[in-house]
Image 1 (tube, rainbow, N blue to C red):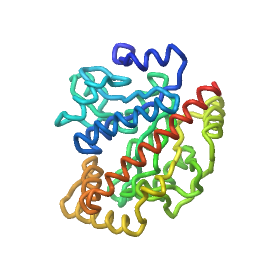
Image 2 (tube, one colour):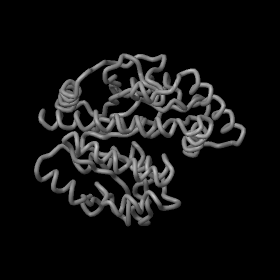
Image 3 (cartoon, rainbow, N blue to C red):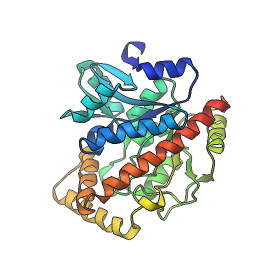
Length: 304
């Protein structure tokens, strides 16, 4: 395992000093946002984590290695590269063996974080059960990873392009707690609320850290979803975004867009139909998650 894992100097120094580390995915850089906004946002998110007392570890596959923490040059190269592969659990071994550039999804980032001894991971939104999954069987590998990998995922809920109800049913079956951070409703990425309730509401980083500590001390395998709503000032209207998602889904179906191509297509369509407002919302919610995630990492580090 060690032959594949390379820690950045900052992460290595942080671990040696016993500082809290926060994992960050790289799909958001390569597939979630256009250049140069992607690199600018990635740098800002890393800085927010530092400002809140933790060490950022952006994870990516470069040159046959899992990089835990990227240098400034690597971040720039990564954000500006064409044809970066989207890496989930299925793809990790192939991409490492062939030394291709790979951007880690939620599932792959969880795997790599656990291998590096990192328990807290900040992202935008998790994948889930796609609408129409009862016929397509299109269920994100993120959910299966949450069932078996001991990493907490701080996110703004499941992306609103998904079937949130079925996503919650799947997580319940797998025993994954969905915790609302200061909310009793499941946030839906661009909006602060959906029609669904979280399993539990916790209101402080210390409470979340205590729950995670208890979960893993008991040997209850798997992660947790810490659902942190987008800030009110940046949230979009629920009816407006639902209407846009419906239109985007219809277009995806008409163009026979399937599998892992659905999410980037839908997010691109939503960005186009909201005239770029969804990208602003995406950036705001990731930054907000970074603040909360860093605080949870600090509290969890103290509970060890």
